[in-house]
Image (tube, rainbow, N blue to C red; front, side, top):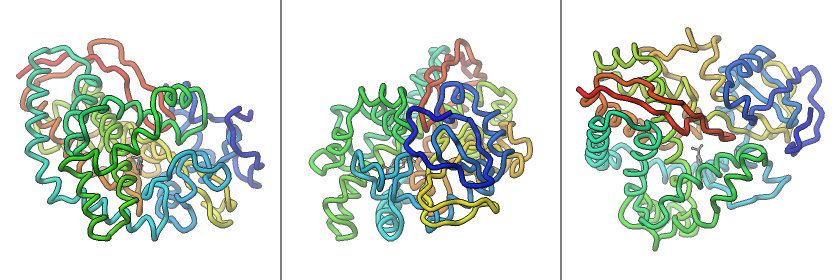
Length: 404
Ligand code: 4IA
């Protein structure tokens, strides 16, 4: 059945399995795992008839699409809309929605802005904030692991690190909510979040006069050196503001949800606190805070022997790849001691998350602080899921902790 939000009317390519799955529906968000398995088992390349887009869900094929930017382009948008057919509803990102050579130049600037020596200077402040926050929460015993920690911690450290002005910071998460919904269809979820945010506001935040010392100004300084245009700097600051907050919120949220749900893994982590970083990465594999992204096919080709046509959109099921039993043993088990190398929760190839060192630093510091203050974590109320076309996470996770 065709969705009222479908943007394409192309027929499925011959011999490609056609599925009636809607990866942007409430039922899917509540339990995506049976649908992930159905998509993986149907074949290497499948067709989603509700939207008339292709999809890959097996690890090997998701990796293939992620790592071949020549055949699978980002420049026509990584959401369901094709910039060439549907126009641009906002200024495209100079990094996310670009191919080489434009992408490479943007990427160079952002990876220098987020390089290990820069992040090392942030680490002490990030650690102190994690300690202070967790100390107060441990004393309270009962709190909401999402609102009071997974959201509050990145909101405390990230806008400051960017050098963002104080006024309007409460708009960052509603903006991200809309942005990540906008990669899917124009469904009710997107419309509701659009009513609460604006694209103009985020663009202004990247302008030099709205920034003080921090990562944002580092990007403007790259423009002073001629590495990028002065008109491009605000858009690259926007990229970090859009990509750097809600993702870490949901990654930290996923980690806390895993450790509260699987107490044996919390015990294991207490025995070996050096597993904090792997525990965070395994939560990203297990929950995949960023569930999906699209590419646009640049020329007729094939995936796993199936015909793939120029101009079609392909949905990459990152979350399904991260639990593909063809790649992972006991894929549905959260295991902090496993090797998570190769998970696609941060993507793969030239677009792989440029902020992953910063994200891992935040995750590790929150866990370090918890390990120093907390003996046990248990779920102490109703777990409420948050629905978003791209992000997977919770709206509420009431917990009770036993302080050390
Ligand atoms: C950008 C994939 C997600 C984390 C992301 C969102 C926005 C941008 C980049 C990445 O605006 O460039």
